[in-house]
Each structure stands twice: as C-alpha cells, then as structure tokens.
Length: 407
Image (cartoon, rainbow, N blue to C red):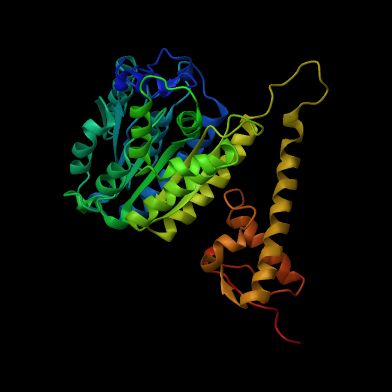
C-alpha cells in the first residue's frame, strides 16, 4: 500500500475522513445537528453579520466575501440548516445595505448536488452565491482573485486536516499573495483545528506499530502545523488533553505571528463531559474583530449548553430544561464575582486602566465564556459599593476603571 493510500485511512477520524473518501449527504453526520455543530453555527450567526456590517462600510459597493471551503450539503437530512444555509440567511438579512458574496466549496458529489440546489434558491432570491466542486486548494486562488479589493471572511471546517499552514498564512492572509488587495486588516479566518487529528496522528509518534502511510500522515500534519515542531510537543505532553492544548496554542501563536493577528480559541465538545472534538480558532488583525467574536462565542455557548440538555422524560415531574435559566443566572453571577476580583487586583497592581487594554486580565478565568454585559455588571456593582470611580456607563471596552475617589 502506498503512503498516500495509508494517509486516507490514518485520517479517518471517528468516521469523518479527510482523505480521498467522500463524506457525502448520505453520511450519518448530516442526518441531524449535534451539540458541537450548534456551537459553531451560533458563532457564525452571531459574528458574520457584525463583521460584514462593520468592514463593509469601507468596501466598494458594501461587498464582503465569505468563503466556506468545506461546505457540505448545506442542510441536514432532517431539514435543519447547515452553515451554508445559515450564512445565506444572514446574507438576506443584510442585503439592503451589504452584499455578502458567498463561495461554498464541497468535494463530495452528493453533497455538492445538494449544495447547488441551495445556492440556486439563494440566487433566485437575489443573493450572490456560488457552489464550487472539488478540493479547497483547487479553488482557493480563484476565490481570492474574485475577492480582490473586498474584505474576506474564510470559514475552514474540514473533517480532518485542512489547508496547509502556508496556504493559510501566505494565500488567505495575503502576506505574499498577488491578491493582497483583499484587504490586510479586513481578512479574517475561523478554522477548525481538529483535536481528534492531533490525538490520532500524534499517537503514531509513540506507537510501536508502523502502519502503512505513517510517513505521509506525519508529513501532512507537518504541513498543517507549519513544521514538525508539534512532534516534540506531543511527546513532551503528559496526556492527550495537554497535547491538544499545547499544539493548538503553538499553531495559533505561529499563525498570529506570521500574519500580525490576534486570536481566540474555543473548545468544542458534543457534551460537557466529553473530550474536546476540535477547537475553533479565530484570527483577526483588528481589536474590534476580536471583541465582537468574543461576544458571539459567549452567546453561542448558551445555545450549546441548552443543546446538551437531555431530552424531556415524560415520567419525570421536572426535567433539566426547567432549571436551565436559573442555572444560567447562577453561572453569570459566578462570572461577575470573578471579574470583580480581577478588576480589584488590577486596580491594586496597575492603578487606573482601560478595559480594552487589560481585557485578558479582566476576564481571567472566564475568558471565552463571559462577555461585555458581565464586565459592566461587575463595574456597576463596584461603583455602588464605592470601590471604583467608574459608573459602568458607556461602551464596555472603552470604560476607564479608576480607584475610588478619595474622601
């Protein structure tokens, strides 16, 4: 068996192959939406519209380009919208003042046929949408050329390993691309960094077995990560969870340094007690993008927690949904207490500060979960108790937190 054939099998992750085999619309994956998909879809719904609205005001004709390079069929078998259908709904919602020009790439034949049908419906309604069949790499230059002069948001959600590190940093972000006019500060990426791939491929490094395709599989991981540095990270980790953390952060740090961006990472699980299936990594070169993404991610996790609830049990007087809202309030109160503690420590250590300049410290311990309204609540509580001179009124990021006035 050749290395390439072995690679196909080695990347068959929990039935989700990144090799030559298709994952088409008949796959169980596309029958109904899982909790993990709820999280990423709610993030997309909550972020793409603010992104397009903001950056589109500086773009010719208000045009913003959206690329989904692993689109799937567009809808689940039960009719639930997948990411392409959700994005087209978003495009329709802002069509009066922004043009979201959507490109959906899908490799599987059956999924592509379903996608074409969805795109045709959208075009009939006056939206700008395109379905492209084949590998993501095949169409990347074409889409980037069409995106020239407009802001770009790319959603990279493969089932295993996706685009190479170089394709991400050099082509999409335009650091050395001939299509660099896409807009340096208005190019953003949200990608799926697959924890299952890290665990499975990393396991080849410490296994006594030598399966066919092992060298090619390791080389594919090298290309995805931008070098073989991840190999030592995996071997030096105490367990798989630490390996996923170290390799994800190492990858994100390297991309961020290469393209001059900041980033978020969000753990994605199908249940709270499950191991991480993948991590969503968002790259943006602008603080507004990072702030808005953080807000969207926090709100999306509320929907994820609700999706994780067990189904109602007719034999029970109460079910988990009955207490969900109360539990969310308790969770938020815990966040506010943690934020208050962080702010008090910052005031003691650095004195007055602006929230946006100390955001990670303000949200320490709740980063990725809490959002602006929880910061505001903490500041207002402190103001009422005479612990800060800031009353919490105004844009949260711009709040200047000061020590309490002297008596």
